[in-house]
Image (tube, rainbow, N blue to C red; front, side, top):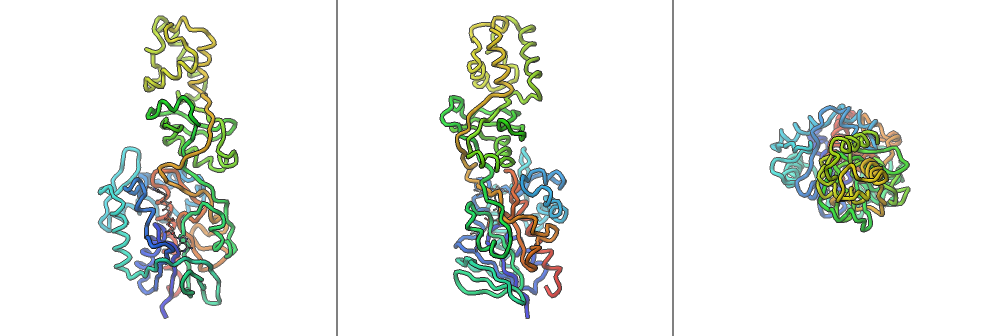
Length: 409
Ligand SMILES: Cc1cc2nc3c(=O)[nH]c(=O)nc-3n(C[C@H](O)[C@H](O)[C@H](O)COP(=O)(O)OP(=O)(O)OC[C@H]3O[C@@H](n4cnc5c(N)ncnc54)[C@H](O)[C@@H]3O)c2cc1C
């Protein structure tokens, strides 16, 4: 009799594990269950409708650095299937990817539909069965395999692959927790900082290429572009901080002092020296005309005023207090965070299935043989830039490889 594999979830990880498994083991009966009426819904809206499939980062020891949760464990996964393999996988199926300036990779068509069409074509070609509107409620281990209780019929199967994505609520993981697996508290990752009508928001649209952001009193800090929005701060450095400090922000209820090092300097003395240089070399110039750090003019003006620099006086005429304040604001400007905003609706879950109980070389449960996990359901998440899909493709591929090597598969 044909062995059966049931995949729970019709997203990126579900499709990728089903397709690769069907390709390796055409004898298997593969059924993909999706609780909604829509397949690949997140792929469709991802990357603003363009689908940021992966990131141009070919060395897997560098790739793992982009995962606040999973950095150590993903090495085992990426050593088997990572960015190069993803690019080749799609290329060999007629989908060419292009690299953008910041390293993000998209289909050359600039449309997520290209990825969906490719995955749908593979599913049809390999005879994978898809059952829509089938919500899995319970997974029970039997003597020979599993029995799945769903919103429809009960399904018996030899192997189960859980690819049901992340959920914002703990209770949504109940049907998985019932298998004995520990769930790490799900929390949001990837968000921007709200400032509650702080005057700096009047500079919306202004960005600085290399600033540094941190939470006051915490060690984590990230350098990179910072964008001022009409509600607060965004940009790669802010998103990276939100991901790596997801738990810290949560514990502080998204209220914290945020320090911005606009100058991107390594220490305050570096900034002080630049100001001293101005005072001695450009003594008669007006500060407003001496934009030392090449900031957008509106920001420089704002920082001078915030520091009580007299705009009508030259550098040599400024008082010491204002100059010290300017140095401080350039290196460690403080803003009160008051809440968060999801980045372009790109909600990503920090938390999920604890990695301690999953063999990250095979993606098989250490507690329940025959049960596998892939994608965002795991306590793995990446920063923005294509890293979340990469984790989904890679973990899904490893599941397929492992099952294909099981006796009788
Ligand atoms: C708006 C948005 C944009 C994004 N853009 C990008 C991007 O450009 N690049 C990137 O790398 N990442 C992006 N992400 C993150 C990325 O989409 C996810 O990390 C990725 O889709 C996870 O894939 P998955 O298959 O694990 O889960 P999902 O895509 O969430 O799929 C899980 C599926 O399982 C189904 N399901 C859940 N429970 C059950 C059940 N009990 N029974 C049956 N079915 C069930 C769900 O309905 C869903 O269809 C974006 C996310 C969002 C929300």
